[in-house]
Image (tube, rainbow, N blue to C red; front, side, top):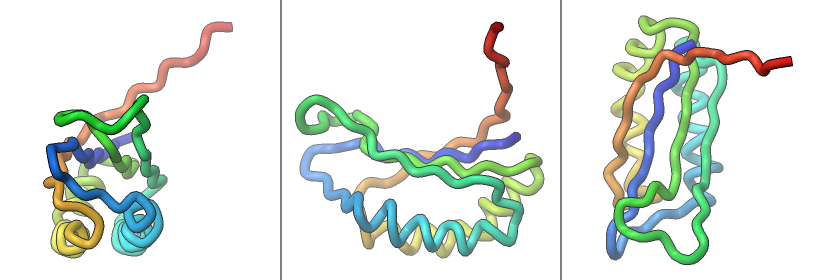
Length: 108
């Protein structure tokens, strides 16, 4: 399983609309990535005691695909539409990376 993660690190004066991100942006992502092999889509609102400090991650998305080829093609084909929507919910530039997932069964 291949995971593409996009994460948002807080900076002083940043703006982030979690309702829009977890609602409308995830709808746009599902519609764009779904036909390209998307297996699962997750979005997190990271919570801290108190307001976020600069550098802390405030939100992230994980998009899962079966193969590296699917993930790379999906990232390349959908980047324009997903990037165009970013200003609708934040002024934070997202960081992203791709990872190969490894399962570790529970002992028992």
